[in-house]
Image (cartoon, rainbow, N blue to C red; front, top):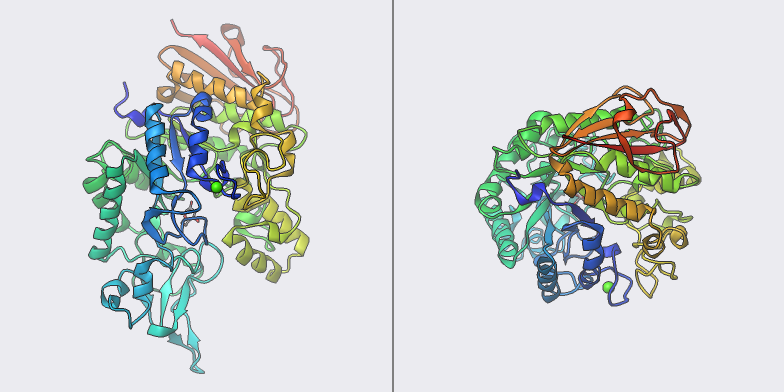
Length: 559
Ligand code: GLC
Ligand code: CA
């Protein structure tokens, strides 16, 4: 039934730095992942996506690569990495790694040569990056080439005195963008990718894959995102990688392209193109922004969750990839807040809402990506001080909020609600001082709720969030849900989340109250034909009253 192994897999994203610290230096590492492989196998996942493990000055936790061929000493050695591959493969598990192709670290030897006219290899490497001469205002003062804004908040241009030029960086200034029009540069990256394939990795998640091409006319504009996002030519580069590297091997390759249209998505990940196998696009990830907020604008402005947009997005993507490609389901990655804090309730209804979020997503067809800690309902941070945060993005944005007129407290609340650090805190294994992640103070603080929210505690409770995750992931395999057909009942209802899944053996109906207020539901099916399979609280299977966040899964055998 499946054309590819990855249609039947269940992926788990490991944020390496925060998952498990094996040598007690406060930083998660590769041996730490090996120590937890049995836990992950038992959870029911069989492919791990490991966030960047390369040598890096860690300006952006490894997305700033200094040496693509070296493992960061923070995380271990190449021997440890080979060992991870072997230990995973021995358990019938696969490892996919992050592939960062849009930029390097400014400490990468290529950039060191590119920025320095006296470097012996300056000529070769200068053109590996994107340079523009300064502009001058009427008073002769030096100006940036354009007013384009970086994804992390500041300008995209950084001045380099030695060449009297600016280089482009669409993320941090320590992450200069690579020039994909340069064929020698592409050759070097392709050799690097081949090297990791030969080492035995099972696939890649291609970072920032829709940004590889830029508008080389450099028109002015603010924020100017259209000049470095989804330009048609980037497909040529991806298609070249697919043809030469990805397709000839039996890999899983996942692209990252925020805001992709239907046509674009099919071009990336349709069955008959040669770019990716799956796509991450984030459409459902920020359906609670408050567009009237000018103090902490954009993704930072927390508003009310628009449930209709989540359902419509899920329905849309199922439709896009129906027959022509393959759907991917996930609540979020390492760049968005924790889902239970974001779309659920991390207070009074923590457990109920975490399970509701489990049922509403993971009964859908496609390949799931579970984010580490989600399986126990880990929450956003409770940090009091700006210094508790670690993400490079936080500090530029904090300054922006203050200059927009926000108070310190308003700015801090926006960070606690929306910063990427929310999803990067140490995995809560038990209630020890550092949550069993490490014996020493970790690189980023543990969230204060580790005594009540941790793996050890949930393992011994058969109805815990963790054990319900296990149950649903097992059910996905037994009932072949990945290949099922989904039908939503209530796309326009602002509170319910109701759908039916038909597989070759079963029919399932999910009925859920997505909000923290009670609800009398207009039940869309005749419940007498079904039995209750799972619920997130004690309930009467036939009742049409739903308590806050109440959710149920019903089952019927197909004859
Ligand atoms: C992607 C990553 C993000 C990183 C950025 C730059 O969006 O998911 O974490 O900061 O690319 O590499
Ligand atoms: Ca360590």
